[in-house]
Amino acid sequence: MLIDFVGNRDAKLELEKNINTGDINHAYLFLGSEGVGKFTLAKAFAKRILGENTLDLHILRGSSIKKEQIEELIGEAKKNPYSGRYKVFIIDGFENVSISGQNALLKTLEEPEEYLKIILIAKSITNILPTISSRSRLIKFKDVDDEEISEFLVQNIGLDAQNAELFSKIAVGSIKRAMRYATDPSAIAFRDKSFELIDRLINLKTDPFREMPFFEENKENLEEFFNIYSIFLRDVIIFNENIDDKFYINIDKLNYIQKQNISTKEVIRMYKQVQKTQKYLKDNANFELTIGQLFIGGI
Image (cartoon, rainbow, N blue to C red; front, side, top):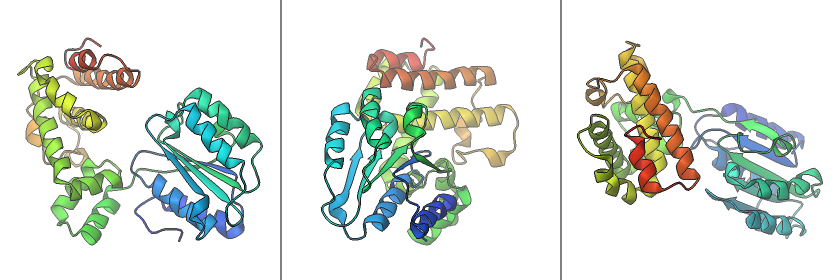
């Protein structure tokens, strides 16, 4: 096996087969949710291609990747390997590469050097040019099953079964998120504070702008807050529609969920607000106004 980690056995077997048969494509696109092992497997795959030759592994990661960074990488691609047969480039967060940056990379994908292997990693194909994806071998990553995550947490982290079940559920298929909850007390504290804040805001117990310090202090964790909020809303729908309890994710927060007096129609509207807020913030909208409008329905 290429590497032993939780989930995505099919992806591992496909890459193992590529190595064993020598059918290693010039470009790959690893596609799947955050925290399901894409980057870990990309590094393991690169290591198998390169052997001990780490000098020819180049990694570019970021929430915003500029054309200039891609051009710098292309310049490096034109140089022969320092040692061995291959050079491997990993670009993690490729959905964040600008269109001009993707176009700059296109020629390298169209006319690749024999020694060059490129692994693109993305959460979504939406922002990736079809001319890029069509020239890459697609490796799809699935969310990891709750049972697999729970078993991993018990066997490798030493968690008891109850906490392992909780963390596997609230991780929503992400082994990375499950590990963070299992090993970082601040992650659980942030989740608890987020629940308290959401409860206050949607029940009009406070003014959104009065709570702005929380958001200012946690700008780096906003994606996690939106994730917590979205899952909270999902669970409210589970309660409203009398769906089987086994489908709850926040199994430790049912007191928050089951006391909400919000119609399913309103919950759906709120969920759409979350999506709009994320988009506007990504587009550099005014931070305070955008966050404030999230909870008063003005977006």
